[in-house]
Image 1 (tube, rainbow, N blue to C red):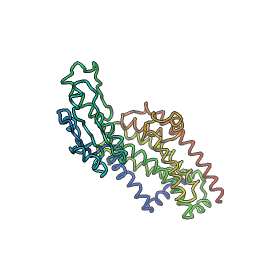
Image 2: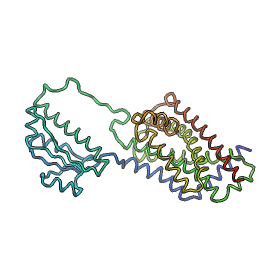
Image 3: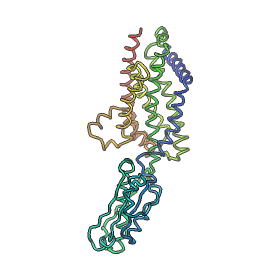
Image 4: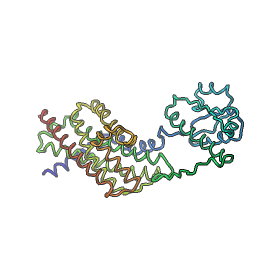
Length: 373
């Protein structure tokens, strides 16, 4: 009777979800429009940044530098005089204002130090930080290329040949689309299971379950498999239709292997959702708990910032979180085409973390039901 009860209770959860239009809208939105917008509108990307140039040198080198700024990272540069530079920056017309001083080319060719002034509107934070590095690289590259014609003997003996693997175009859409799917898998799995438990409490159907011949294990297992199935199917559809189809992101590895890893991750995160659902007394409280748990899980998992850039303590601490292992296996499979022989440590870690979270949540769930009996 145990398996039959789990199956019937899980079907009941699916029917309850079908009668909740807001949850259905959230699922569809999270795995379609949210993935597309997150992949194509990443804020740290420099895109069509306005730049003005004050050319006081009027030399071939200064014109060469001005011609090096072009879309899509920059808008076509606007040539202005020095008297208009501050006024345009104050009016917010330019994010960057580059001032090339007189005798710039002559000083470089004679071996003297030359300085170029770059004014940055730092209120546009993402473009200011990213664009500063781009502009410095562009100017150095153009100056070095120009000087090669005059000072061939100064060429370095070794030049660095860069080859980008797995994403040769350095297309941020490839990274953003998959990471958005990973984040939404975690978010939806926690929300759906926690909301399913709170829905029982708010509708008063928990008392009905207490008088039925079912155990807390069966109730919890039913909520986990039903909500995990919904998220798993939505993940597969988003990966095939939105990521591969609409965004044209190449998937190098096995989608079935990735979905298997997603299932293990869902086992852990749905158990966490049940645990948070037992702590909260209402949906607003559950939303606050989600903020406390979800943001650190997503930001510190390695999907936003590489784990190597974090303090050692954070790296070790996040190894106990399922997101960290899920991000590692997802990137290995979908980006680098890794097989089970490579990602099996992450599979084992997810299974162990999921088991611990399941039994912790089960103990908490039994205690909660005991206080209501």
